[in-house]
Length: 231
Image (cartoon, rainbow, N blue to C red; front, top):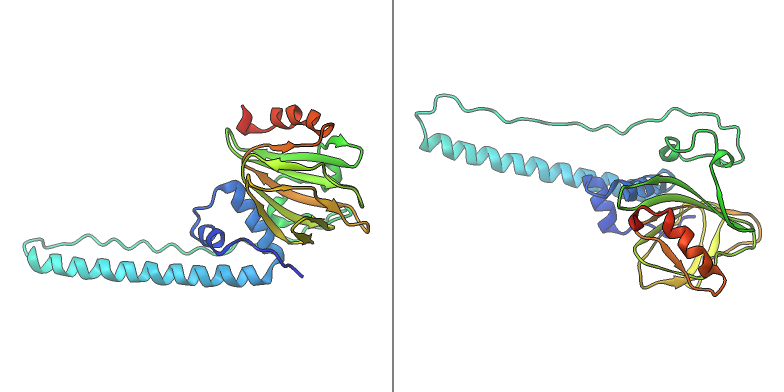
C-alpha cells in the first residue's frame, strides 16, 4: 500500500501541464501505481475543464456586449479551439528481466535495469543517470543492496525519490514501492534498505546531494561532476 504521495499543489501543476518535465516524469511514474492519485488527477482535470468552460462562457458574454456596441461590425471572428486530450495508452511489452519497468521510463530503459550503465560508488550502492536537463535537474536511478545503506547526506536543492522496487527507511519513516518522497535542502538523512530485497529508486535532483561522512565526502566531487547543475 502506498503511503506517501505528491502534494496537491504538485498534482495540480501536473494536471495543468506546468510542472517541470523532470518532475512530471517522476509524478507520472508514481501515478502508474497509485489509484488514489489517479482519482485526484481525474478530479483536477474535470475541475480544470469546468473552469475553462466558464472562461469561454464569460468570453462569449463579453463578445455579445461588444456586438451590441459595435453594430457596424457585420462579422465577428469565432475563437473556438477545444482541444481534447486523451490519455496515452502504452502497449504491454514483455520484459525479460527481473523487474517490470514502468511505462513512463521505457523511453530511457530499453532492456531492463541490468542493461543500464551503472556507476558504482560503493560496494553496495550504485547510480545510473537517465537524463540530464541542461543546467538543471538530473533524473537517475539508485540501486542499493539488501540491508545496506546510503552514506549520510544532505541536499543542496530539492530531491524527489520514488521507490520502484524494494523498500528503505530513514529518520522520518519507511518507504515502499510506489511511495513518493520530496526532500529539500533542510533535510539530512541516512537511508537504510530493508534486509529482504535490494532497493531501486527513481530520483530527480535539482542540485547534487552532499555526502557528510568523513570517507563518503570523497565521493562529492564525482557526484558534482556528473550533475548538470554544476556545469
